[in-house]
Length: 87
Image (cartoon, rainbow, N blue to C red; front, side, top):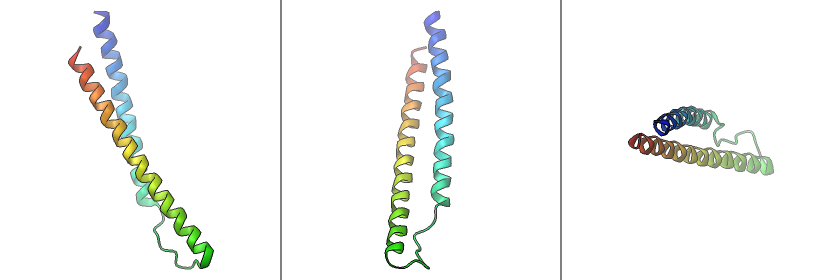
């Protein structure tokens, strides 16, 4: 009986973690949409290059964050499913 209660508690914690990961993922997606676009109008020379490079790096980092968050959410979902199958 203790094992079932323990599994249920772990499952509840995993569900909470999944909800938090989903919330963070939405926030990162919103940040990606709100990020400045690659238009360097008004910038010239080295400043324009640095601005574009920084925006490119920010975009890549936000995309990587999205991928990692999706993976973490998927793996947490699988863990909840697997744990549920053994309760």
